Image (cartoon, rainbow, N blue to C red; front, side, top):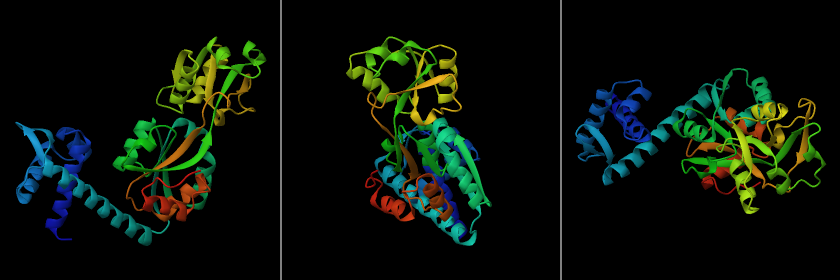
Length: 319
């Protein structure tokens, strides 16, 4: 590439980042490690060369996107993806089994579902630097979309984002946990009416199928007494142990050997199943070790299966 082409790619990055930051040039400049005047100047140079305005303005502030600007931004995003894919393709062949892999996951997935896959991956790819970020499903989707994470793993939200391709990993259900000796342990089968009589501790509304818990009670015309919400199952279990209430958690988060003093109650007949999903940025070229990590975490997703979904737009694969 000559200097002019490199500069134009940089200008496209500036435009794309300003859009991602909601027209906030200052935030875009910070994310790009440059200055606000520098971003504004390069965008103006690009507009002058193209002969159109990409952004609507009020004084020096960007307030919106013009109609031709929308077409320019769409093309810019496509060109930036292809430029990144060329780099990743080169690294895949020249770098071999070296590089970085950033996984973003919720606490439940990072704590209870991912460890076997992470252990196997590290043993198989010792020269790949694996980084694990924990966050909310909304944060995870944002990190993957922006390229701050290569693979996202969560239950909620991911499949609603058009910029992402998602693949189902496994289904799971909620269970109820109670302190040893709690009266609800005598309820068989467990019912919504019985649960509604007791204080409940469960996930924050953004996590682990919480929306399905809410809907299940609503269908019964009942209002659950949720006294505490938490971001992860370990916090929920702590407060259930202290007697604050009954816990509703993902069944994969209950460990009979470790969770001494807590009893498991099957609630699969009460709550809908939930699907853990892997999220990838649409149009992204995956390196060989990324396919390998996906397969280690979800054995039914080999490279051929993932490629079929990527090529088909992400909607064709079903568990």
